[in-house]
Image 1 (cartoon, rainbow, N blue to C red):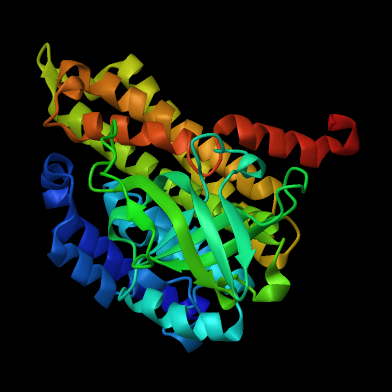
Image 2: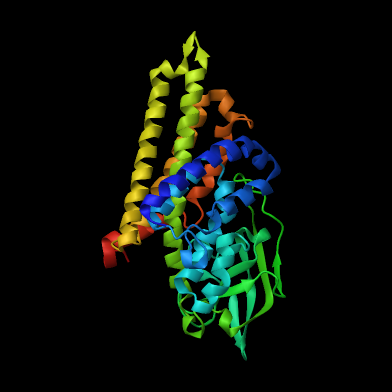
Length: 384
């Protein structure tokens, strides 16, 4: 899809969010589930495959337009984005980035249409922001690989059709070496998914543990084929870098929603015979949030442009994810403050977004990991 084609799609998505999704946000939060009607609508709009090349049935959006789309999608509950985030983001990127032609032909059309849901199975009980510590093993046995281990907090695991499993193929290799990625269909014997995690927020976005007990997969399940062995860590890093931009864009979208909710409430809520929006300290809270929102959007789009032209694919995504995830937390906190006691009530949107926003500073690399990436990329070898 070329740049001039994106505007009609943005209009369609914006209309869908405001007319179809926002009226059901409280329901999604209460029931911890996105209604099937919204899932099917997302499929029809191509949201399950907007990053996937057109030759495989996707929309083939460039990274800048992907971010513009995620800013729109971030305006509503994160559960909407989560439905298709692994298909278009880190899980789908694994196959797009390192898959063989056969692997791409087999899986990308199914992911793009929403027929299949993919999950990115990297995090473990003792390996989170630093995947070099992962313990899941893959042992060669004739023409197969046998996988054993546990993955934790895996997005969309309860509904996944296929997992991108990162496992250590060389137990003697140091740190990030000896890690490979395997395409593991959910129905493979030995694969089991634990109960859904009960989280603080982001209800409707499901995560769970994935257990691998003697899971046997053929040699061609290695992403990239046999030649792809030992490239898993680099694949994870590239996919996470791309995913961080998209996550930052979603945070920028949530910032915009929180500002709008704050302005609406402050304009309608009256105290002492006038709207609280006339109070200068309330104006200061909103002004700070507008500034954070504008800075977040600008940083996302500038980082996306640098990513697209290849001039910066490390520092920019890390800085965008770091700033935007921290900014949305600040904006959510101010939104609750503007609402006063009402902002602490479960029936009010800003209370829900306050809970939802907290996770952004943790997954796909904590804020502290982003700080390390930024510093090391900037300082160089002297950073250690």
